[in-house]
Each structure stands twice: as structure tokens, then as C-alpha cells.
Length: 80
Image (cartoon, rainbow, N blue to C red; front, side, top):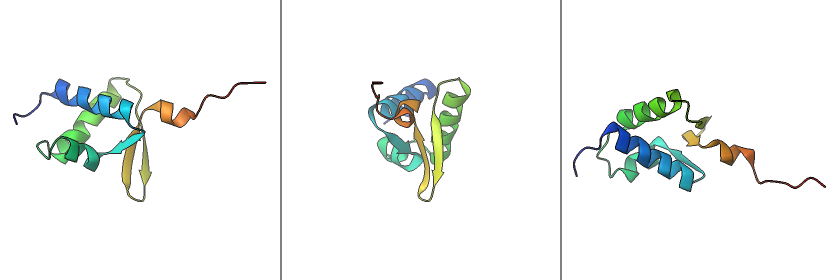
């Protein structure tokens, strides 16, 4: 597999974030079949966040989890 361009890598990460609740760098590393370095994935996440694309993260006991804001908003509730 050839190395992905930065744009291709960013788009695949965004697609993964949209289709999953949250993701860790190690999960992304495995998603890329360990062809991209962990540091490259971290830099891509930093570039996505610096591009004003809303990605949040939580430093937990088992590593940093990245997610889109929709996960944090919770389910929509109707006001009665």
C-alpha cells in the first residue's frame, strides 16, 4: 500500500469520526493497517483541529479519545 497523502489521511480520519462515537490514535493506526506512523496520525489530527473542524478530545485512563461534537451533545430531547 502506498503512503496516503495528508488530505486522504485527513478525510479517512474524519469519515471514521463521523461513523463512530469516538476513536483513539491506536485505533486509527490499526485502521491504516499500521502503514502510517502514530506521530503522523497525531499531526493529521492536529491539522484537522487547527482548520476549525470541530473535534474534541478527552484524556482518559486508557489514552486520548477523539470525537465529533455530536457525541457530546447527547440525544435530542423535545421540550414539553
